[in-house]
Amino acid sequence: EAGVAQSPRYKIIEKRQSVAFWCNPISGHATLYWYQQILGQGPKLLIQFQNNGVVDDSQLPKDRFSAERLKGVDSTLKIQPAKLEDSAVYLCASRPDRGRTGELFFGEGSRLTVL
Amino acid sequence: DAKTTQPNSMESNEEEPVHLPCNHSTISGTDYIHWYRQLPSQGPEYVIHGLTSNVNNRMASLAIAEDRKSSTLILHRATLRDAAVYYCILRSSIQGAQKLVFGQGTRLTINP
Image 1 (cartoon, rainbow over the protein chains, first blue to last red):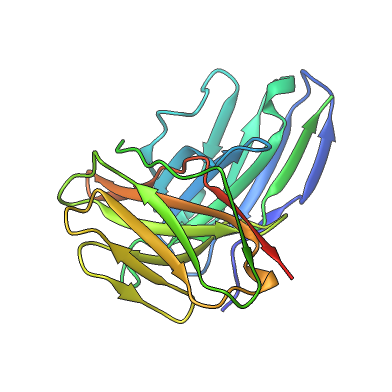
Image 2 (cartoon, each protein chain N blue to C red):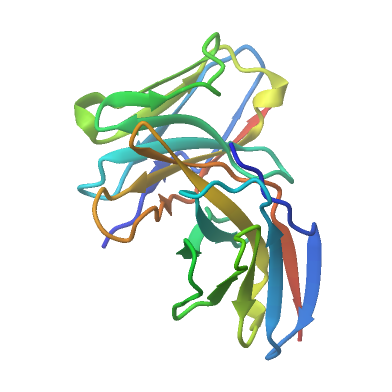
């Protein structure tokens, strides 16, 4: 079974520039999550999709972050304009709706450095 | 979201058992207890979860206190590959969708 794919793995940008991250979940997984993990901290949920609808985006800084999941499959997370404090690893995860209750499958993450 | 408390770090020796504690005194009756671990430069991976009864799988065992206010993840025979950050998480179900809120976790060091 192929895992959750994310790209790019690494990105370096200057503050006020924009960046986009892409995630392709495991085939058939209806639920998709984006987490932000700052160095030394646990992952923080940014947004959760069920198919192509947003379930929870209460922690997403909507003035600069946006995310979409067109057609209920892959997803993109965009930051515009980036700030220094956005330097983090952005993790995508997906979950099947049936069986293995609650288990999330994570990608390897996209590491963002904002200079 | 219900909160968990874990020690910041623990250390153990290779081939010895490891007991990782977690306190969750505000757990509600329908919260599941999940454990994930994160190896260096990787995303978190699922370890085990339970509701009330103790659980075993190929990776670990989960012992849940009778009042459910604490739990312990047990690695029966630690190897160097078990060195990771271990997260104890209460899974809340909001509007039928599942949400995992991560804390700081416990950094486990395994000595050869």
